[in-house]
Amino acid sequence: MDASTLGDTLHAEFGGSWSAQAMHASGFCGTWRAQDADGMRLFVKTAPAAQAAMLRAEGEGLLALKASRAIAVPTVAAFNLSHEHGLLALDWLDFASPDSGFGQRLGERLSGLHAATQPRFGWGRDNFIGASAQRNDWSAGATLTDWIAFWRDKRLLPMRQGLARKGVGQVLLEEVDAVSDGLHTYFADGHQPRPSLIHGDLWSGNWAMLTNGEPVIYDPAVSVSDAEAELAMMDLFGSPPAGFWSAYQSGFALHEGYIRRRGLYQLYHLLNHALLFGGAYAQQALRCARALRSAMF
Image (cartoon, rainbow, N blue to C red; front, top):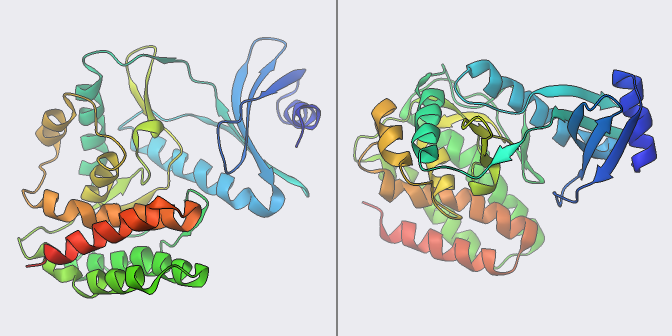
C-alpha cells in the first residue's frame, strides 16, 4: 500500500483529507504516521490481505488488554480489510523519556494485569509472535498438568517443528526434546502457575511512558499463561526498569523458583528468533536448552 492508497482508505473510514508518512518501524508490516486536515493523528499498520490476520490478531489483543483496565494500551481506531490490503489504525501516542518512578508504575500496572486469574490457559484464537504463528488452543483446565501440556504442545513443539523444517541442526532439536520431556521437573519446587492474561512479547521495545507518566504497552502476542512467561521475556533482551520488581511483587507474589524457570520461558522466544532470523540465535537457544537440562531436579 502506498501513501495515496492509504489516504483514500482512511478517508473512506473516517472522512476528511488524510496524509501519510512511512515510518519503517517494523520488519513484518508497513507502518505509517497519518494525519487529517483537522490534526487527528493515527499510527497505522498495513499488510497485504494474505497477511492481514497478523493485524487482526494484534488488534484483538489490544482490545483484551484494554478491557482489563490494568494498564494503558493504544486504542484501536479501525481495522479494515479489503481485497488487496489489511489495515490496523491506532490512536497516536506521544511518549516521554521514562522518569525515576516509571519502573515502579510499570510494576504496579503489570501486577494488576497478571493478578486477574483466568479459568484456563490459552486464547480464543491463534495469533502471532513476531511473524511466527502462535498456537493458543484452550487447555482443559487450570492445573499444573494442563499448563505443562500447553507449554510443551503449543509453545516448544511448534517451534521445534518449524526449525526442523528449516533444517536447523539435530543437536538443538534433541536438546529441545530433552527439555520438553522433562518439563515437570522445573515445577518440582511447588510452583502452581495461575492462568493470567499476558502481553506475550513484552521486551523493552514494547513498553514506553506516555507524556502523563503512565506506562503503556503495545505490539502484543496475548495469551492466558503463567505470568512468569511474561517476566522472563522482560528479562531476555535487557531488563525491566529500576523499581519494577519490588512494585510488581507488592501486587503479585513471585515464586522463589522463578530464576530456575526463567530460561524455560526464554527458550520459546530464542527458538522463535532462530526460526525468524537464524544466525546467532540458534546458538543462543542451544546454550539456553543445555543450561536448562543441567538445572533439572
